[in-house]
Image 1: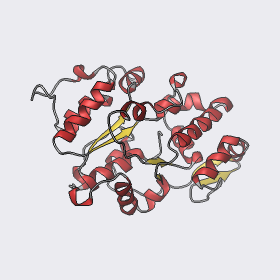
Image 2 (image 1 turned 180 degrees about the horizontal axis):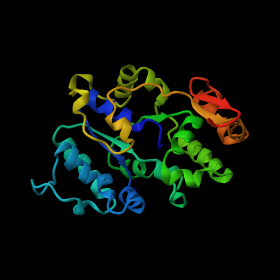
Image 3 (image 1 turned 45 degrees about the horizontal axis):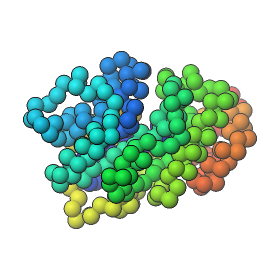
Length: 276
């Protein structure tokens, strides 16, 4: 989900494996971004990423296509075509699913179906090795508030509850996958990435690691996309009434139990009487 560390994790996975990693891919991805910033959705088109980041090119021409060629949403044919094209060149593929649009999707949250679109689309065509990564519900919520297109929708009781029920639906959808915590990754990025690579089924003898500073650009958090290192962020300040509201929500309590988090982990959250 958004603000769970996916950009940083993706960069480490590329460096460890040399894989073609397409980032934040969803059938509705380009049109969602175009709704926020007209004309910007092309970078969420899987074909554009394949050309721009990995020089895979169009299968019928060696000439890179313009941004205008990638204004449409990602069809099943588009996604399958890029994966097969990369695999045909002997290059492993990692697809970073944009499940945020399935479970939250502000400001277009009415389009969130609470079901994972991309795995459902790909399952008939490929054997999928999947992992999930998560973050403490409170710190992920506070990080979401830093997004201008989200915070104006999220700071009210019903939408905060919707955040929690969407997160819980996501956790149920990935039940059975190996799940990794952002907090563990931030403390030991190399060790946790090695475990992710193993869970994804990579043959370690076939890996083609690349220097971290040569990892392609990715969609997502710009700061994480530029950072040369990763560390656990400082604790998030949260007003006591806000934390109390979360703790009254059954979905929050179930998330804590399923994911093994404590509500008021002092490494992550600083509960305060007044905002600083």
